[in-house]
Length: 191
Image (cartoon, rainbow, N blue to C red; front, top):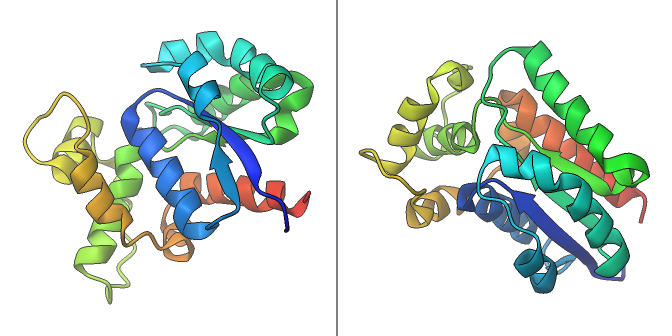
């Protein structure tokens, strides 16, 4: 791939944005450039706002800002596969014919579960124990990642974990991360 791809992010919080940005920087260095102007114009601060603004974000992103790809981050807030698939389907529906250029970031329960997997792997890299961490309650997962209850994600702690991002390993342990990563791989095959 010779050209740099311009992307935008619409997500519910700083933890999603941070994860997506760090993932792209580490997995695909010098291949993606974030459209800062899109980020200033299109914002969400919770799950409802992501859903409510997705149609406009898609329209603006691909017409006005000429994005190559839009990353949409939304916690599933669930562990049930049917509920998660229903959420994914409803998000896809809002993307219309731009759907192939939209990558959904929908972790089981919340983004902190992906961080929790990576933290466990960082702390014990030789372990082959296949634990399902996504069943841990969201509040407990966030506390395990960031420490005692905080209102906002601790991006310093998050970045310490993301310094050890091993996508190939995480794909094996988290079905929802595998879904996200495969969307990125499939998108890049178009270029």
